[in-house]
Image (tube, rainbow, N blue to C red; front, side):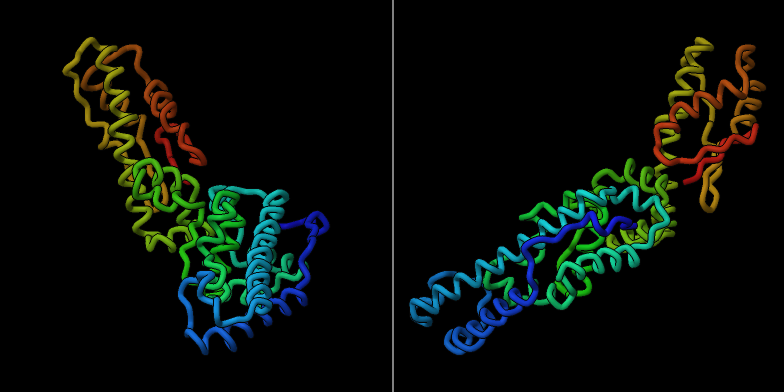
Length: 316
């Protein structure tokens, strides 16, 4: 996935200095604050007033600020990664890439710059999050990391799992994970055409939404059939009514649609043959039916269309 390591330049971050600051902050919190007031849920400045002397309080706030800055630097590092290795989640979902291998490669690159998993455990420690009032979800939103690309989505998703941060990281970006519910008819068809049910990235997306491959394909076929009847076949019927000057003309196009395990088939030659036998029409041909069906189906991205001479076979 990542080919040019030399393109990725790290600046400013020194893990030993970070660890020293982190330990200093944790020592103050655990040795001086918790014994006085217990663990905090949300930090407020007045909490430490009277607990720490002026010098210690100033040092404490400086350390808090440094943790915020370390997180900002890490976010900028991820954004720099986006500059060089940019791919949408949909494109990754249509690829043969392995998300586990991609995560390892990204983390290897980050580790070379000092951002090891051990460092990140400290940086996103639950106590640090409370002291700076920024959980992992807030960190992502503050830096708009959920608006970058599929690799960053994947990295944050996996990091959340590894660090056990109990945050929902949306694959495909915030909001797009709900699209299967909000825009079900369009999204199921598009994601089916991308092959979400067949690729590792796509299956990870479906797993996040608790949708099995079988249920996804079942719903995709349901919406594909609806699209064909509501859009493709209706348009075909209206054109035929006009062509025959018969507004009452009816024909069951759906009977020529077959759903298979991983594809659906429109038997356009049989459709033409039955229609011609029933209504006639010298200017009609199998090609006429095929082309009008194809005009509508070509708008679906990544959908492979095969013509056998009798049937149109559509698959992701």
